[in-house]
Length: 116
Image 1 (spheres, rainbow, N blue to C red):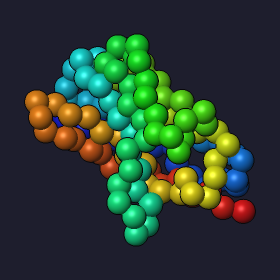
Image 2: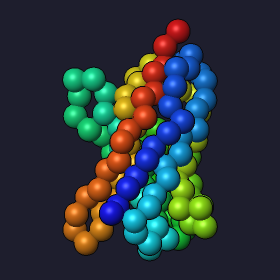
Image 3: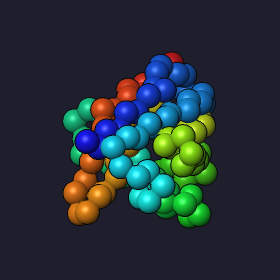
Image 4: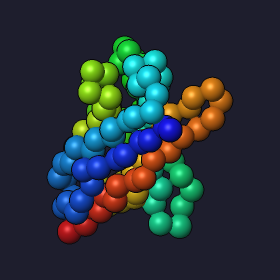
């Protein structure tokens, strides 16, 4: 069974930082690209970043480029999202996701709240 568990969210002031983690199980983690998405209250889900299976290439939404860094440790079946210079508009539930044989899997999210 594919399982994805995000953690590391919390409450932070504008300009602060958080590091999210996503622990994966139930599939060969190192064979698949991984994605972070987020959903703010009342808004559609937003794709924010992707990392290729070997970590060789990364991609970011314009809204987070230069502030967020995606990474992964295939030996630990874990993906990360380092979030710096956080803004109130980054407030959302953050989810990690992957596509395996044309099926999307998304785990439980972690809440990030940016507020003064």
